[in-house]
Picture 1 (cartoon, helix red, strand yellow):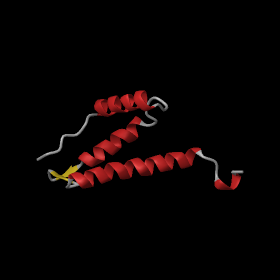
Picture 2 (cartoon, one colour):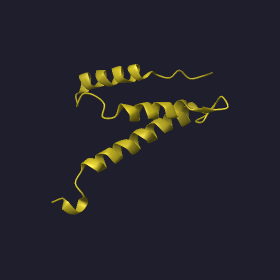
Picture 3 (spheres, one colour):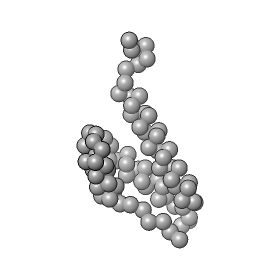
Picture 4 (cartoon, one colour):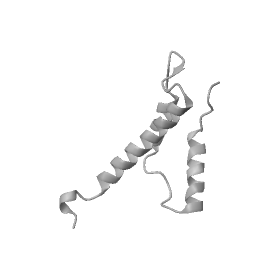
Length: 84
């Protein structure tokens, strides 16, 4: 059975709803990065998903979110040597 993937519009709508319910800065920092993360999980070769199980797909989403969130926060923070 093939999984059903959310569209970019659906993901953005869900994100906006979470912001409305729980607060935070509106919008998405990098829509291209979001599209890339979504696409990487849907990637196939010879009509076989590169992430073959739903668990591997979920792990790929989490991995991408964690790595990019960490990288982004590190880029916007002061170097350790300059913190007081």
